[in-house]
Image (tube, rainbow, N blue to C red; front, side, top):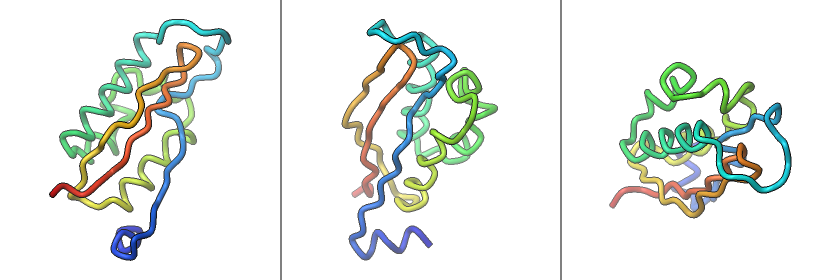
Length: 114
């Protein structure tokens, strides 16, 4: 149902966080935690491959998934956006920022492969 919105030139935005473990929030600016980068880059690689099966099974396949997302609420918007984008998509990264060492705020646009 969401894919048909693309044909109507409707912009679909999924807003969440690539990693979101507030139990590890200490404030201040620090270097990104290694698990944050490993999880985020795994998602980026799965998007680049178009591996929707791996993305859907991220809880068991992605490194540090449960640590990166103790709960799924901040990650689930990615699936809303992927559903609207369709199968022939390519992720174009707009930003790869980590805040407070544990909040990966990656931003990307999903565009059709031409």
